[in-house]
Image (tube, rainbow, N blue to C red; front, side, top):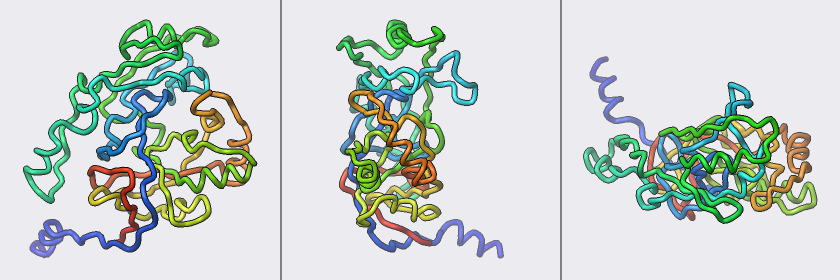
Length: 283
């Protein structure tokens, strides 16, 4: 019995590819929570999510304790703030990724956390002024116009400061269907997903059907789809202008149980790229 258990541990049953369901349309990360995101050609998908995603957030003294962050719901100018990593080549993936992979090929050692200096961010304000993320003048500029004059503090984490799960996914077909339903173009970026999928299914919300299943993205990374993504007023805000269209959230609430897109946990880390195939797996 001991030998049988050992054999199971050292030779796990491999994933078996079932079918290709689509491709990665685009990859996104958001260096600062609720600020503009950046499109990536490739990204390291780790257990904590997309490398460099939501490294920073702004805490508000008047926000609920369970969700202490300032978001564009309260300060729309956040959506017009453009954060960029000061050293993009260092923020692209863990510095020791190659060493971790080569040290024990096939084992999948977890890379070491990225040094804080490699994740330094500069933020361009709507006025064009550029400030370091830790410059007190940035929080002063963001506080301007906020009701209640809250105290704002900068938060930093080695793990993505996400609302729920490490990774969010949404199909382009879902955004397109919602647009058809409300009679307006719906920019998929409203949903602030990490991975946008171009699925083979013609209709929207096909991603919901893979909850409880594992997907391989590209040659290595594997995620498990856990649950549908409950939506809030953030999806009413245009990602470019910050203008609100309440019809988007109203439609999601009335016709789709308040859900759009899915959350996932990462089972196998790896580099993912725009255009990568997305496959359903079984064991």
